[in-house]
Length: 489
Ligand SMILES: [Zn+2]
Image 1: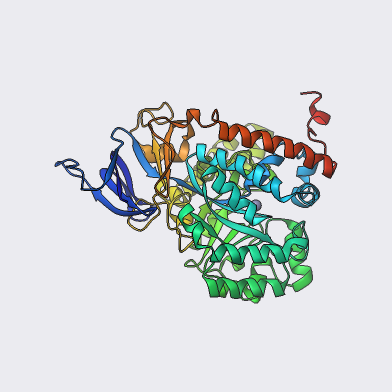
Image 2: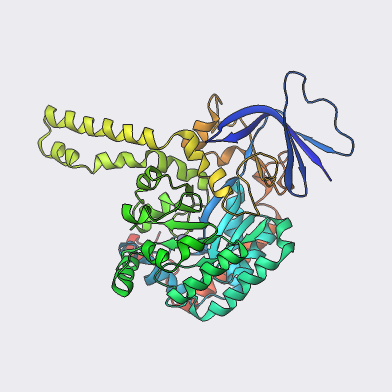
């Protein structure tokens, strides 16, 4: 059955072709957009026979966001890492320890909470990477979020080693399960990282990616330990190792997440048509440092944004990544030798040098990150990463994943440059509705306010809280480590 969504403000196009905010009709059938018709002065006209019309005149309609890297279940570990652990390798020192005690039902229960948070931020699809892939799928279906699920594969180190065979089977079963398509759920191959996966397993993953046209979603060069292991074991960097094992050549699409320790020489090995950097700035400032993404953009490698997990970011709202990517590099001036010099002598000459440093920095930022290019990183770039689930753009053939916003909400007012507001603001408060695969997930007539008060969320939250308490007890981890640092807060 076809239904038609109308609004006087529909965001068409993308950052490459140019965005247009125009009156338009979007026809939807079978979960996909089948037609987009821009409407001129003649108005919308009569309803076609057999179609149901949803008139959203007065609302702003955009693609829903795509979060290119998440671990929904890890929202359960929010606030668990103390400053001492964050100084070292928090993944290996803390998360592995807790994750080795995970039960399958924990992953489903915790992932639901991350999924609810995603919906409320206008996220329609997450690229999620975690253990117990079938439980991740269950959580997405329970909540109604769409996602490209990557069951974590690791055979050298990490809590997933004993599950390798099961996760491999799950990956192939999910890839063959056509019933998932209607729910907007796809699968990717999910090697954990270059130092936790053997060359033999990498070669198997590369062949499978090519044979089944499955994207590969992997952490690459995310820690100094990973870089050291790559060099000491194979005398090659993590990216050069992917080339050696045939992954760069064979992968139908390769999402390289983080890329903190990737040199220009490594970047030159990549192919802009099939490889992309997934940048997670708010996560990286906590567990590592923001990847120097400008070097990737200079080389023409596409860039998608992800939140990473609730344990190292504290939000699943991928829209909030945009402002840090746009203006975070300003901190380079605060930490520059010119800033140190001025702090020491306070002279006018030092002040002018510091200001000149700032002007040079801002000039570079404006060159590398226009508003339109930035928005592509949460819409069209990750939305094109899976061949079966094109989204992040309102165009025929794309999934009907649409967000509806109140243009007069304080977060968007006065509404003279919505694109700027989506990059620089915090827009989740202005969300009114969400349609995913043509399904009404948040009804614009009702808004998101009632969503958390409804029984579904409350039952999910109660189960997750109970399971988390039991998990931390099994893992013998203090559920409130911050008490040791701040007293009883
Ligand atoms: Zn991650």
